[in-house]
Length: 457
Image 1 (cartoon, rainbow, N blue to C red):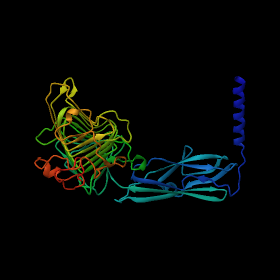
Image 2: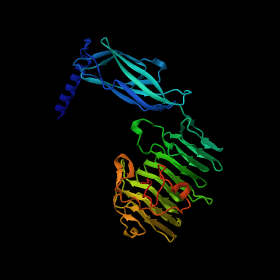
Image 3: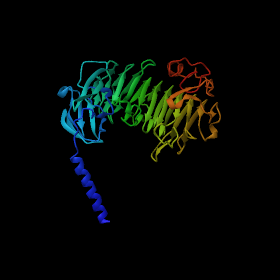
Image 4: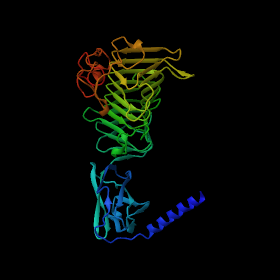
């Protein structure tokens, strides 16, 4: 056995020795093979570095070749930097690549702040000279200036507009007694693990034409649908909010809400919004309050809505699509309970009307009464995927596919033959009808009897 190991080691040493003494060809036809002749970075915020891209440079010749020079054309003034096999450098000379071997070239870009508002193009190139051959790799990156929010608190009534995107680093808190108003078309980006805490008021005034966006500051396509990139929005005990026409995506939890409202107004009104690609849940409430109309929630790790410890939940004309593109989910999409702990349980008031609650599991609605607290349930004219046959009343439709146009392409409008068309209860006397329920998520007028879910047909 020892002799076999010794023989293998000798062979490896001989191979290594041969590689070190490998003949270097000067043939001008011995070119390098480059996998990508151009590298495009998606929008990069000024002063924030990009992710790193890798390019493989191969020598497919039988003999070694010497790269006399690899360099950034822009030199030290370039927004790009390169790393060759672990060495950060602006240029490298006399790099030998053995026959049938390769090297890895890593590229990153950091763009200096400018006065420009719109995305702008940053360019450079990597030049390789080998045996008189000049090969070029084009580098392109789109830069974007932004308002970088590095302070921990907002201590005055503040308005954010769409003129520049906002990038939040760390934990930002809207203090009690103050408001943050976000105007239509504003984009709010969060650095890794950042979050927005609301102890005062959050007013998100998106429109159908110009929704407000909350997402990660990683804009490369690789991260477009990646969950868990930031922590989420937190409504604290004294906090409240109205969120209209927003897209909230790619966080751990979209919205977390603690406690009931401290006044006669709902803790949170959520209207015409999309919450998707959450690592844990779209919404979590701890003995809290959510009035939600015309929203779409989907692709979340454990829950779309997880509400425990009782609370007040008024959910009408929403589409809760329990389809998970990234997660092997085992829990019902919507879960409600009066229980939080042995010392924390409260009345649960739940009004579900004209919603679609459907997904890949046999039970997508879980309502649990675990304590002596009062539970008041109103379930009217919903399409439900459920194992609880007692819900088969009050106009509810059980366990029939809603016929989404294309759930795999995230299109949760319903087809012309959908069983939810014109099955909605009349909500014209609802106190929130004129402000929220008279139109669907796309701004189309609701016609009674309405179509269930967030899209009128």
